Length: 325
Image (tube, rainbow, N blue to C red; front, side, top):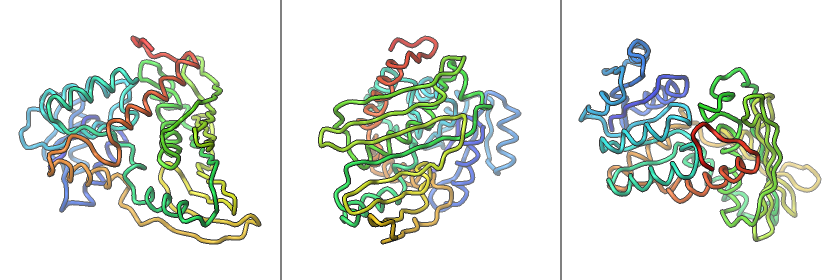
């Protein structure tokens, strides 16, 4: 499978290193940036045969099977429109788009054009997801009715976090992982959400706290922010103990304890190249089957998460330029 990358920033470099680790399954065939010099430097660093200073030019390359979009959230909608118009399959970084309306338009177009489009929320594709689910379902910590998850990084110096025109803020960049963590393991049958927020001077959320109430009585307590560092743990609270997942953004292990804090079980998750390889491999499998979505992150789930984030931003009064929430 030949891949092209749109955007030549740090996250694109992670993907380039990832694909280099699975040469029998995929290779990066081209890189495109609005700066030709940046694309050429990227191509040289990662030994990529084609560099373009225009996305449109790269999309004319008939040898590319899948485009990985590594631009800011604000650009995903337009980038994906270009790819679909060129009949190129898309693996787009989270958050998928700025809002639900954009996401629905993209996925409708993907269906009409029979083009694979999927969201690169990598934790959905990793083997750790199944291991966590099986561990909790085993009953080792009893009946689980609450989970907590947090994801905070000290990245207030990053332009993409602060600028509304780049669809900045903690929610779309970090909180999306917390929401996905909760829905992966507690499902989508949500009754209501309570939340609180702290905004920056630019009008985006720098810290948020979300309490998600499920109709089956389960509750998820979630926080995300970009002004400080947190432990990034996900914790399941059960009637016989609790289970701690290390780093919900890139899970490394799960440890189960009884009600006296005695360790019952510890599982280290499988070694990974970067973690991105699983979304790439699944895209390859779906392309081979002529599918337009990936089972690990189906279109309806992307829309569901976007609707949750839209409702939160509406409550907080966070809008991006040109939006009608």
